[in-house]
Image 1: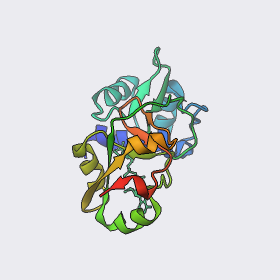
Image 2: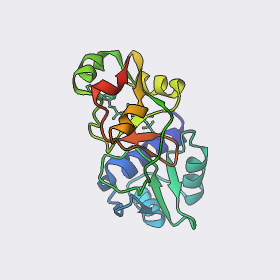
Image 3: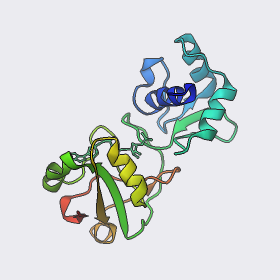
Length: 178
Ligand code: HQG
């Protein structure tokens, strides 16, 4: 794993799941202070400069992180397990969205629907390739098709993260086409 990939994973851990690992705090909208973050990474044995942090944010293919306008704050665009309010506005998704999972989860998903688990939302993609990739993180991938038209008609709400991941609270099994 390259040094930047390793750092990127550590930054994900801090900004999405465990800011306390290095003693950083996130505000209610998920932002960490950049100077504080850098100082605490370095104090905890992870050498990183502002320029390296900026390069990691810029080169991240999934655009996982974002700075505010003056680069004094940074946050993860989605994927949190800590409770944050990203202030995302409800949006109308394409008629079909995709969720990649592992075949071994299928029976449970058919029974219980898609649950957000540890994260704040269920994550959906607008394309099969991304969903396949996400699913293969968990095992032999399978891509579920989600009928968003009926979900919307039934009052379910969708959000789009700044890095184009579709988010919703729960997908009951009846809207899933396998
Ligand atoms: C599964 C990555 C059994 C669900 C990706 C998934 C994504 C169930 C796993 C983001 C279930 C949770 C999120 C049920 C859901 N029974 N299994 N009823 N309901 N599951 O990692 O969607 O690279 O929390 O199918 O690109 O895989 O980190 O969610 O397999 O956008 O930026 O439970 O993480 O982004 O796994 O991935 P996860 P996910 P990053």
